Length: 130
Image 1 (cartoon, one colour):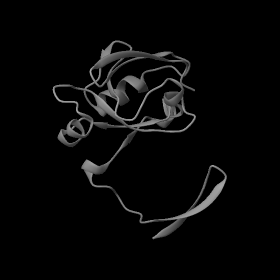
Image 2 (image 1 turned 90 degrees about the vertical axis):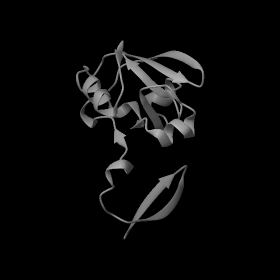
Image 3 (image 1 turned 135 degrees about the horizontal axis):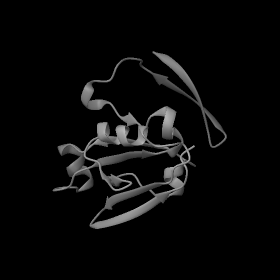
Image 4 (image 1 turned 120 degrees about the vertical axis):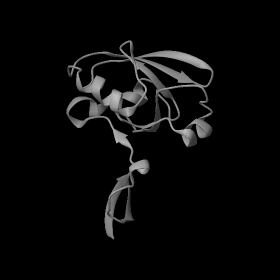
């Protein structure tokens, strides 16, 4: 157990953290640090639990599980629970595919996302990635 000191909205807070390795099903994929870390989101594969939580039955993609404040995802209006279906026209069915597509991008590439939000399909443009 370690104490992590956090500063959020000008307030200091100490958070006790137990260090360890998450079980495979608990891991959250962060987009690769060397390419679009500044995009500011976390994703998970769309499993049965997330399908139920976000009402995403009969869909494929990766679910946005977190949006980091002031990141490019927040600025591009992505939301927690959005389903990333495609990037730059390439279908995304898993976080492994997402990492591959993202890893092939150049740092100043504009990203075109197709997301599913509720019953809508939405095209979102994310300018530059670094």
